[in-house]
Image (tube, rainbow, N blue to C red; front, side, top):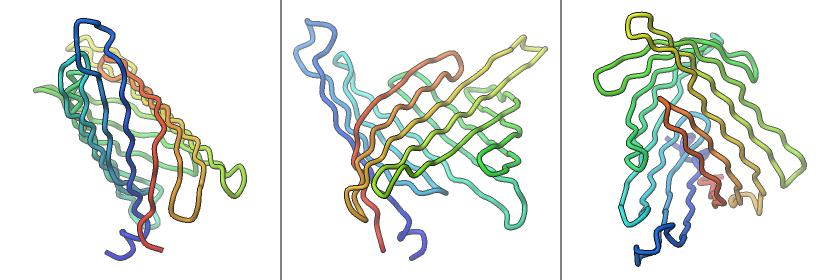
Length: 195
């Protein structure tokens, strides 16, 4: 338990904006909080967009058997702001920054099987600056349902280490899942628990 807490990072962000519809008197907002490390991720967003309130959740964890270049990643996403809810299970061969494997995506009453590929990398620019990029592509094909679709998830982060525990993050998160495209660019704060 101590090992998990020592690598756990708490993060959060806050944004406000004027609604695009001038007839809506209240400002839009988004509050994000969560925790993460290399093996687990949980994030919750509370937001108001064009006067409507939403709660978005995303969570996943990874399991990598010792001595085998394989990982499994179950994931749950419920984006009420985008009317998108699904569960996904990635099982991939992993070598350094590259992964290739199988994905099962479950939404509503449909389970889709597909090929998945990923490129994940981190670069330390210097003692205070780090760049992280993640690209995941998923190809789903079903002759019976006549489905041919490419889903994408892209994540870029530029992190400034303020001190040993505090980091300022600039994040671009782009998704195209089940034909629903959305992106988010934000600045957030991360705090590392433990030593």
